[in-house]
Length: 171
Picture 1 (spheres, helix red, strand yellow):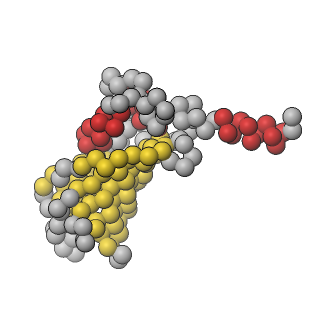
Picture 2 (cartoon, helix red, strand yellow; picture 1 turned 180 degrees about the horizontal axis):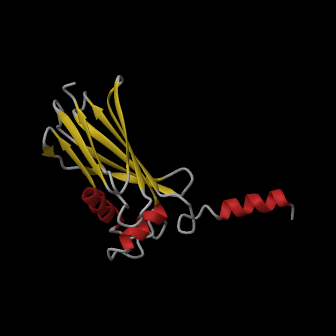
């Protein structure tokens, strides 16, 4: 068997989300404000193995996220977990995030979760607290991109010491 073919096979078989290993712990969250729909549209990308480890540490074993054998409660548990660790405050009011759904990433290593905050009209400020997976991984970093309009974008990089960001809209 050629070295090239061996590398291709090892890459293909390492795509299994349960066995995928990575040396960094990072999540990505996009929050887009839709003025026409008057809603915050949220997408969060988390490594499946990291999420499953965090959930098993609080008693949710064998969820098998994004697999054929996924637990029937997986989406509800993921939604609850995200709501506990991603808090959004609009104009000094904590908002409720509705679950839209989830899908596996193109590389099969991560899950995209989709949420929405309907009927919201930010005028003063948006505060984001994101400590997702930080109690599981000391090196966890969470990137948040907040887009209010084509000319109003903010980026936050959160870690264990600093997981809260504020965007003042009056400035």
